Amino acid sequence: MMLGDGAETEALEAFVEQQFGGDAVTQLRSIRTGGDNNHKGGVYENFFAVAKICEIVASEDNLADFTLSAQEYSYVDDLCLRQRSNNTKTNYQAKNSSGNAARWTPTHAERFARQTVIDLDFHRVDTSNQVLVVSCPSMAEANRQKISQCGRASFRCEYFPYFPASVQLIFGEDTVRENLKVICGSDDVSTANAVFSLLLGVWLSAQAAARLDDLVRQARHISKPDLFLGLDPTPGPPPPWLTGLCSKYAGLELHIEAGRYVVTYRGLSIAMKVEIEAQMPAALATAQTLNQVLSYLMLQAAPELAN
Amino acid sequence: MGTPEAHRRFASCADEGAKNALNTLLESTREPSAYRASMTDIGRQLGRIVDSSIPIGSKCLVVATAEDADYLAAGVIESLRSSRDILAAIFWNNHYPLNNGSIAPVVHRYLQPGYQDADYLVVVKSIISSSCVVRTNILALIEQISPKRIFVVSPVMYIGAENALRDEFPPAIADLFEFVYFAVDDCRTETGEVRPGIGGQVYQLLGLEDQPARTGFMPQLVKTLMAL
Image (cartoon, rainbow over all chains, first blue to last red; front, side, top):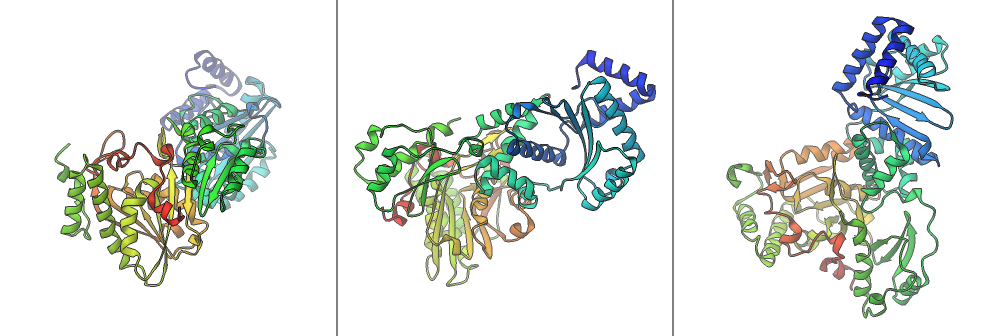
């Protein structure tokens, strides 16, 4: 539930008051106010959100099954992940701190417990998980020890590192790097960083709960060229005219890399979409020199790059 | 906005020759051939400064975009060439804005055979504003090369661009950066153009239609290196 859903907000507050008393409503509103002041969180929360998006995109086939939102009207409100097929809701509270802010306390336990009741009895989900995310590994471990003492299997603490820039995150967090590699179909870190920026951009623009298939569709739409080719089926063999062309000139070679046909010549790499003409284009058939061939192939990228 | 001079601070390495060359560049914005010559001259001057920091006999990889290859980068290469093994890496980037910054993915690339053995990277860019293109091209190479230093070379930088670029990278890479530039400008338009900068959009000023990735433009430098 996002801010502005008037009737639902009232219904939720009524539910909270009935379950936990009037002070609980005041507490919920104060959490809401804190969230509003920092909508979509800071760098840490947003990088965690994009890392979570990458994790799901890299590992799940049915992205429409997942919805992500931030700053819901909730006790655990930094990030909320819903999975429709198993009616599960997982809420994340992110704390970029190694100090008291990240330390598991009875207040966390109370808020997590209340959120669980809200999710199960108000939102009617089958499973509700609450996760405290902290940027200090030793604090994460200490929190896990404390959480295990409360005996609530649906409460967790996860470690996610803080880095001030996406490049540093990609270099510093192997899981993020590996997931981006799957999405890009390439281990090129410049491509990985561009994909991370694209996903961050669409995540920051998302006004409400966003389905992951929509987020990826939007990110691919503004990706020029499309850098998400790891999500597509492996390309088939190139058309015979292209292989024939490459065999015509000594040193001209054809590869499939990162979901594209790549023509190389003495250090030059020309990347082409795999959706190319089945027949040799007329302009190539009349090309007299290798220079003309290379220029023509390079130009094939242009339509994909236009704003 | 005040006078262009009011928005410019010259670097300590910018002698009269460099200042004159930057002025000549700004006076050449209506004449691509003069603009190209001026950019090449600035490249030579910047190259001479870098030259004094790179040991004789080392292997040096000059990294540039396709639009800068024949002018700024060619000038830098000219000044570095003696007694060093100079290689080139040329990128066709598609640079465009996002709501959270900009990206410049590499579309095509030319990596001169043997580039992996380079001891020094000299990353050349006609202007550094968001540093997005420079960041991308360093990232595209950094895992294949172990440079001792990374020179980031540009006639003009936007204020704060140096720290912004350093802050993007892990310290192990950022510590290798050395910036060589003649001027820092502190004025930038809403569209991201630095003023006075280099006088506008480099593509048109050099007589190119658009970004080379969108036009299939092949620099002469690459043709020469491929013996095409």
